[in-house]
Length: 112
Ligand code: 5GP
Ligand code: ZN
Image 1 (tube, rainbow, N blue to C red):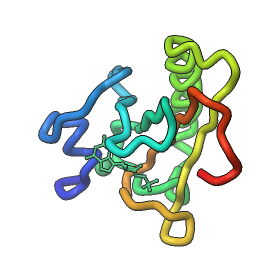
Image 2 (image 1 turned 90 degrees about the vertical axis):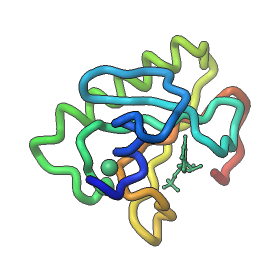
Image 3 (image 1 turned 30 degrees about the vertical axis):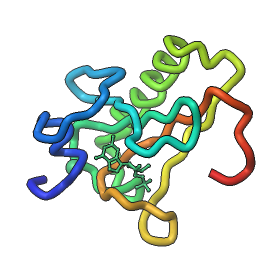
Image 4 (image 1 turned 135 degrees about the horizontal axis):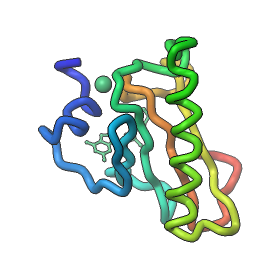
């Protein structure tokens, strides 16, 4: 998608601090962290939001969660972490490329 910020990050047109990459998934530090660890984990395939995940994406979405576990292990988030997905306008989604926030590094409060 030509006008998608995260697609531009995937293509390297916009720089990012990568923490994980394979042929299907990219993870990078959020530019505006709200916790000591705040990483965005995204599929390289452009899926606009969780509402648009299709049956054929099931394996990819499952893999995102095992990648999150690997990152959490690497970063020693032994006491736990939070995964957040904002979907659509009411969900507070600002970037319309599916992404999962991985938050941790402290005891998180109720609000995101
Ligand atoms: P959303 O509100 O859509 O769930 O989250 C979008 C996230 O993307 C926000 O936490 C915001 O800080 C982050 N973000 C927006 N633009 C950039 C950018 O150019 N680079 C990085 N690394 N993160 C970004
Ligand atoms: Zn995109």
